[in-house]
Image (cartoon, rainbow, N blue to C red):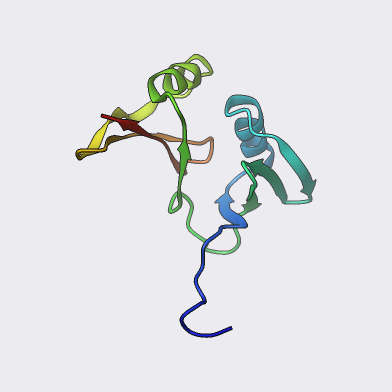
Length: 126
């Protein structure tokens, strides 16, 4: 491996600290509809398009709510409406955060059952 060829290009797993694993599993599985891969005491693993999402009980003074996961969706208005129908409230409704000659980038923020920020994102061609 040389310095010029090395680069981090793929996320294999994302860790999110949660206060209550059972409550978080119910949210990610039942509200967001993510497939649960497997569980161990104090932790759960979900498939998110080939990236593993690892939820674990916060340890010691590990802070909650510092990670933001951005979920790419094709139709952000439809995705937001579906989540709202499942009881999700948005802190920030989907809106344009960037616009150029190629596309608009839309983002909307909401929280999981543990207070962690999550977001929907969609790149819409102009």
